[in-house]
Image (cartoon, rainbow, N blue to C red; front, side):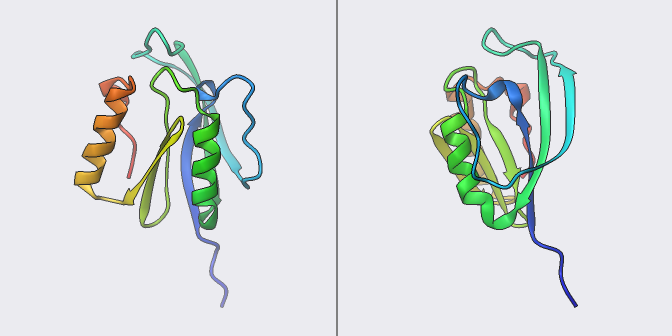
Amino acid sequence: MTHPPRTLSGVLIAESLRVGSELSGVPLQVTAIQRIAVGNATADQPEQWTLLDFQAPQDAAEPLAGALANCLAPTGGWYVNYSTATEAFVVFADRVFRYPRGDAKTRAEVEAYARSVGVPAPQLDWKD
């Protein structure tokens, strides 16, 4: 009996990418694309976002984190979050957080960092 491959899933906001950056070398599968109006936009974030729901093999979690950290805009309070069956990843420009899903203490530390780089409180809603 074969088992399906283990995957990770998350959401990337296209507008969070640094101009001129390229996300490559990581096998992402886009599973949905949505364009939404954001009620809690900031001076550094547009009023409309393009959401890319994605999946990737679980073994791509670390390389994906590094690639995203190099691609995200350093201003504007942008981050990408994704999770495997056991771990949550929250990636900012040049900074990666990885913790066991459900670890409230570490999540609180990540939320504090997120606030320090300008993430508005309503956007601290990632799933872990």
